[in-house]
Length: 115
Image (cartoon, rainbow, N blue to C red; front, side, top):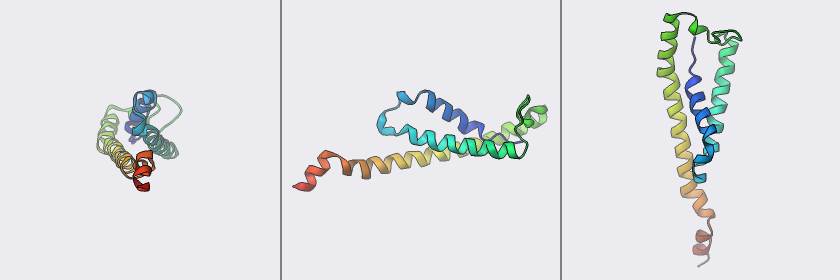
């Protein structure tokens, strides 16, 4: 009945379509890899449990209005927090990389170390 993968999938789709709009130092490819990987894994799990089917309405939770409401609540309670957690991990990765690793690799840091 769950469709929690739809929240990260929506973000992954948006960041993939607009990936060239993001500055290179944001490493948007890292976020896309994390989100697409998680969304695909969740979708496979939902297919394995029969919650996603190859015929309309595709999500079994959409077969009745009551189940659709439950599905939307689960997206809000699970999918959105899961997506926000992924974004937080990505932000931390970028900050740590840019502050500690990339700055150590910069030519200015190399020149300062030689003095």
